[in-house]
Each structure stands twice: as structure tokens, then as C-alpha cells.
Length: 251
Image (cartoon, rainbow, N blue to C red):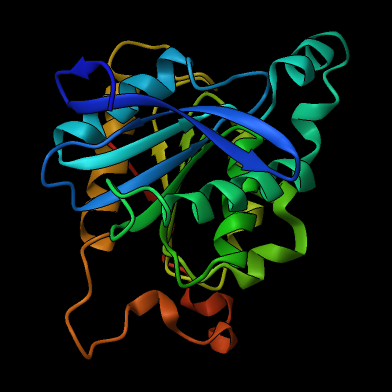
């Protein structure tokens, strides 16, 4: 599948989404047990060094990753001038759904359980995609995300969801706390103390990667025959099923 990395075969892919051709990088380690699709946001893309670092840690744990540009080159050029497309959550969500559907056609990962990792506004797109593909998406992780932008679709998310926020990012932290009250699935809020919005502090991103890996690995295991996955519970469970907030140690 193209160039080699320390994590396994990596190759450039193109995904059709509503007439747009989206560029992506798929890494599929040998013996992968699941695949995680990344939803970037706030002017970022598949070359984001932060998301690439997280993806590499997931690859080391035998999780395949799809790093995807949710905007075309032309759209990115417009967005750099206006900043409007990065907040077009319906557009980003539709394209994330298209990426999840595409994974079923890629032989290297077609049989794997799917997780979504969303950063900034991409977290809302990841959550909406999970709500619209409940049988495909089995886990979601948000890094410094804006889950509140998913709006009413938060209540339809069945996939276990981990919200990771920096302790020095108070506005986004409060928005995550508010959004968590609308999630009816298994959910946890992890605070990386002293970390800012971009997790640029020493050890902060490593902590994010560790939390994401620990969340995805058990949830993306193939279910045993005859057993239903926990995230398939009825949405009627209500907010009282939400796990209490938990603070992490400094990364």
C-alpha cells in the first residue's frame, strides 16, 4: 500500500464524498484489531503533527488509522481566508460518514471495528457520524473538542465516548461538561492538568495518546458471537448513565 512506516503499511487514499475528492493516509499495522478515523478541525488536516503523534501511538498498539482532510485543497484555500468552512459542521459530518462507509470497501480494514478521534470542531463531526452509523462506530475520543457543536445529535450517540480536555482550557472544558450531560452513552471526561487547548506542554500529548489508546483498545475488540456490544443500549437510558467526571494525573 505504498510507503512503509515503523507502524506498518501506509498509503495515500482518495475518498469520494458528495462530489468532493478527499485526500487521506491509511496506516494498517499487521494484525490490526480496529481502525480509527480522525476528524480534524479548526483549519487542520491529515498532516497535523499532533494528530499524527496520536495516530502513531495507536498504530503501535495494532490499531489502524485513517488521517483525512475533510476539506479539499480549494476549500482549504477559501477557509484560510474566511474561516467559515471549519465551522460547517453538517458538511464535515457528512464527509466523516462517507469516510466511515468507505472503510468497508478497503480490504486492509474492511472487517475491523471503527472508532473516531475528533479534534476541535472535528469532534462534533465525529460524534454526528457515530450517531448516524451506530453499528459501525464503536468508540469515540475527542481531544480539545467542541462536542457541543453536535447539537441535538449528541443524544443519539451510542458509541462509548471519551472527552479529553486541557485543564488550562477553561472555556472548552465548560463546553465539554455541558455537552456531556446530553450524551446518553457510556462517557467519561478526562482532564489533562496544566495542558492548554493544543496540548503543547511537555508530556501533555503523550497523555492524550495514552488515554485514547486505553479507550479504543477494549471498545474496538470484535464482539464475541452472540453477544451484543454495550454501546447498543437503548438511547432511553438517559443522562443518569453518564460516568462521573474524572481528573487525570499530569501527563
